[in-house]
Length: 369
Picture 1 (cartoon, rainbow, N blue to C red):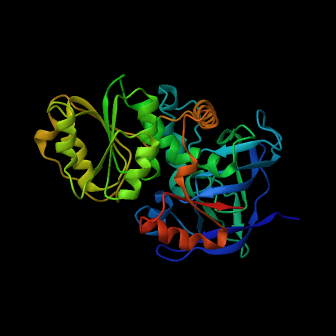
Picture 2 (cartoon, rainbow, N blue to C red):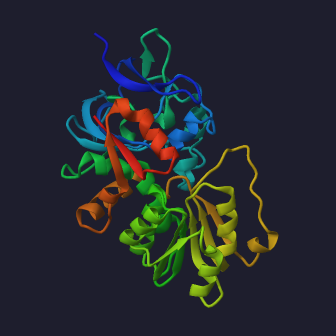
Picture 3 (cartoon, rainbow, N blue to C red):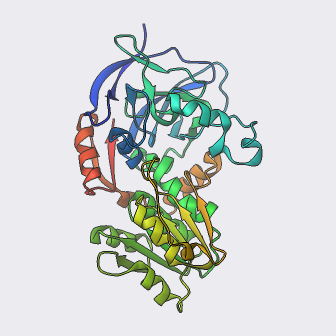
C-alpha cells in the first residue's frame, strides 16, 4: 500500500498553504526516507509564496529540516535506518565542470534540474491524491511529515542535538556562519560589519567571532534583533534608522571602513551600503537577495579601490564536513542556536508563521512534527 502523509502544499503564489494528504512515490535505490521532526520557516520559502521566486506548482516548500531516517534504498551506504540527520538542499553530481572545480553550489545537474522542482534526478518523489506530481522546493520539500531524498542530502548528526536546533544548521546557520568562516578572508583582529540581523545575519555575527574578528558590528532597524546580535557576540550595534552604518564603520577604523562587510538583509539599498562601508582593499560578501528581475544601483566610486565582492548562497558549504562541525560547536557552547528560535508551531499553523515572518516578528519559527 502506498505511503501517505500530511504536507503543506502551495497551489499558487499569494495563496495560503493547504494541509493535505499526499502520496509518496516508491523509494528509489539511492534515496532515503526521512521522518521530519523539525522544519523551520525561511525567507526563501516566503519569496516563493509571494512570487519573487518562481517555481512550478503545486509545490511543497521547506528546505531547513531535520529528522530520523526511516528507510534506506538498496544502493545506499553511509546512512542507516534510525540515524538522526539534517537535510542539505545542495545535492551535486561530483563530476561536472563546476564540481571538479570545488564549486558544488554551481553543479550543472543541480542548476539544470532545480527549475523543475523535482528530485535531483528530475523525477517527482510524491503526488497529490488526484495523481498530479507534487513539486518540492530546493530538492527537499520539507514542510511535510516525510521527505524522500538522495542519501547525500541526509547528513548524519549527533543524537544529543535537538531536532529544532539541528534543522537551523541546514540553511540559515550554514549560510551565515559559513560566509564568515569559509567564504570571507577574515583575519585576526579585523573589523567585520554584518548588515541585517535575521537568522542568517546572526549566524554571520557568530561566524565572524569564530573566525577571529577583532570587532563585530551588527546593523539592523530592529532594536530586539540588535540585542540578540550582542548576545551572539557583536561588539557594536547600529540601528540604521538612527545612525549611518557607513559613518560608524569609518569612525571605528580611523576613516578606512570595515575590513569585511557581510550583507544579509536582502534589500537593494543595503547592497549599496555594503559597498560604501567597506574599506579600499576590503571584502564584501552578499548573502541576501531580491527579486531576480530587479536592478541594484551603486555609486561607481564606491566600487573602486580594489574592493572584492563575492556572492554566496550557502556559505561555501561542504555539508558532510561543515554540518557536524557546526553541531559540535553548538554542543560545546561556542555556537548559539536556541536564541534563534522565536516560536515552535504545528504544521497547521504554518500560514500564521509566515505572516509573522513577513512582519519581522520572528527570527525562526520551527514546525515541530
